[in-house]
Length: 121
Image (cartoon, rainbow, N blue to C red; front, side, top):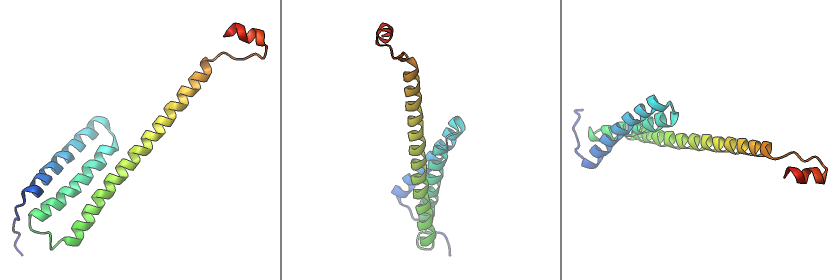
């Protein structure tokens, strides 16, 4: 079966944007070593494969594989955002715990003697 290109400007623009996002994901990972950019880039790479296959006229022939590819891409985005949220919450809780720890350290120690404690405050 010969491959026929089915021109669709919307899919073409989506493919170009997917390529840009994959490249930016790689660049961001090289600079920051954060996995979020890898997962997002990989997801958009999968979306790009789906767009390219559709533009090449393989949409009907590859319907089930394209559904699987797009589903995996969405799952990657969901996973990446969930992990980012989880790490953000842990970081926020850690920061709050350290702030409370140092706040408690900076308060004067109560001796139990009201006159002595009043002098310290």
